[in-house]
Length: 201
Image (cartoon, rainbow, N blue to C red; front, top):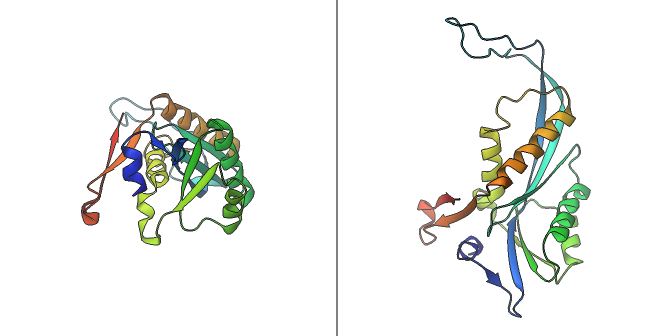
């Protein structure tokens, strides 16, 4: 199992090249929400927190594309206004530039990845190798865990003035994650019904 192999440490190909495993995913439809009225200042004895108007203005959506590294924990991420094959390939190109050219990049993909992406991977046979997660195993994709972490932290109750501001916040949040990267690994692979995820770092 790929996640078990990655959690064991450094991996190499049959010809001795280093093999790097990343879990690639995309989250389209992240909403940029703006306020309809300024937040009110806290009042001692009445409401110590900053009250936020529950009403909001929709200013469009963004797509987050990211690839957490299963070995060392850093995250390569991009944010785009559109959700197309072209943007996804840009992330793969970033991975190509980021990792040493002599290394093999093993890409873990969800089952919904388009055939166009697979065509691009096929043009780099000695650089990328893809592994698709089963339809019932989307929870194994560490990108989903990464996005849930984003949703609980810097994306929680976020209000912005523009989509550009939301993009800046997302990328700043990813930089903060990379400042203290977390290595993800799984435990108990022989018991699928009791599969657990632990984070070390």
